[in-house]
Length: 248
Image 1 (tube, helix red, strand yellow):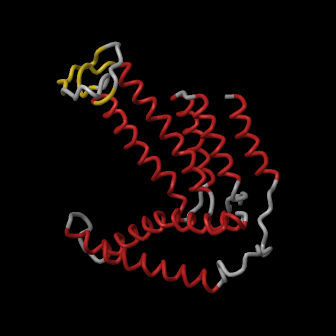
Image 2 (spheres, rainbow, N blue to C red):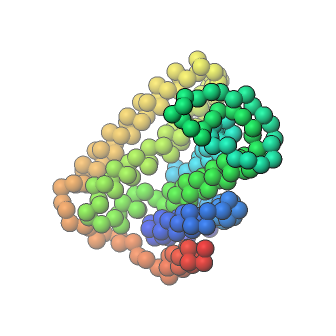
Image 3 (spheres, rainbow, N blue to C red):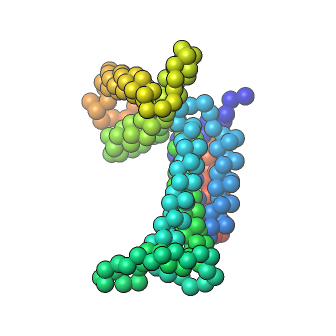
């Protein structure tokens, strides 16, 4: 069964409302609940399109951000009194950096505060990754106002690069495995980088030729070819997001 096709702006508006609710509540538990809901939505609504892996990639990035934020919060920052977990050596800083230190007592409150901030930041990032993984950038470009059209083209190209590179990288690695070539280590990087660069350049040339043949940037009037309609299910999703903001 095919997935239901939503309006390109539906998930972006929903993501904006979720991000606003997370920032307004400012609670790591609410942020984790929001991430759980977004994960279920992505798992049930995503397709096999190249941009559908955006949420999974953002999830991996979020784990790194939380780890780095916790590490920085423990090693560098303003001391927070509380239950001491471990004592680290203190690095002396210049006198013009009062209140900040490197090392010292690592308290439970300091670690909890760092983790909470990291979770909230990453949940906001994941809210936008939700929209990126469920919305076709090409369909989104079709519904943008004419005044934002050129800006939208740049955004679409920029957001389409990473998913296509990831897909090309996986395809090249799979082809090398089928040929019996080694795909790990520094020596294999050259065998992957050159085909990846060649395929990326070829895709960029094809995209430029395709846009030129369709008259992008020549006529400022919007085409009415195959308009995308706003339906009741789109309204329901947007209203649900607004209710979350209103009740938070």
